[in-house]
Picture 1 (cartoon, rainbow, N blue to C red):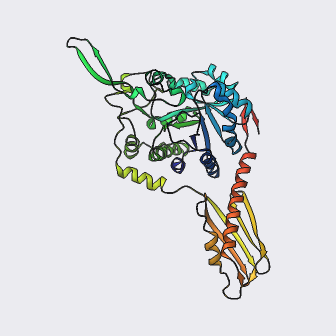
Picture 2 (cartoon, helix red, strand yellow):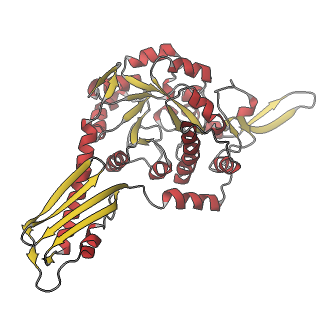
Length: 428
């Protein structure tokens, strides 16, 4: 998550402990996901929850308690496949934007009308649609999100029963065993006869960087990079390339794709070769790996470069501080982030120092230690009047109080400002 945000992602889809389409991934605990929400919102980014499996009748009683803490912490949206879950969420969490999963196979305007009635504000159409078909969906006025990079599923829009049949693990329950990536033996007769082994169901991975400007011209609202159980280096590296060319588009400069960026995308956990999906093509032999679905090698230098650039630290929100210290008055600390500010004061007045009075440098040193918070100090202004005795413990306590209060203030404001389109109306 942090790598993708550092590299320029505007939003992240995260899986919780239940109901996600990656049951065997190291998904987020409730505490981690809430922390991720608060962190992303500080950076003006969004977090969406993946609740995109088919939910059994006996599990419906767990949905409300599962979603409530994320809803209360400002979850920005939820992607759903199951129409029963959509109806439940729309009725019980009416301010929570619903995104329709590609596994709900939206294939045209008629599908959109149906899902709008269930509260959907965004659809991820079936991946098999052409760009013209996607434009027709966009013309309905709903937000459209499409895949631009990553692994492709052989079955229509991910509606696969193959894993269930051969392995007892349902892809629609987040447990796909990937039978399409296995080799299969076959025979056929011609003049000489033939017998062999191949991968006839393994699609090449998608890479659309050369089509990105055309997709932007089509008015697609959001581009989705598939990252099923990939490494952090993949998320950060791929996002950084697409971010570069999307930003260039909006600045009016359609940059040519560089050989370095082309190599990066083809080196980061891509299955042998690439394809550009169905935007301009409907099936074809050249979409299949056939020979091998194994991932291409990635050189260590590239991975190290990505780690150093995007994974060595987290992006932080910049704050400014003002401290006022005068003998006989409480110590005052103001911390400001964008339009948010908080002021905290010591419980007792500052006493005069009989030996070594505090210097501005001493106070600045203590207050600037923001540690493991998601803030970093941009500037600090300290005013000291008189020979003040300023305990380091008091400064540390005030700093922690101020940062906690500021975080809570930003969080509360995000919740109050939450306005969503429900059935065409803005509410909140």
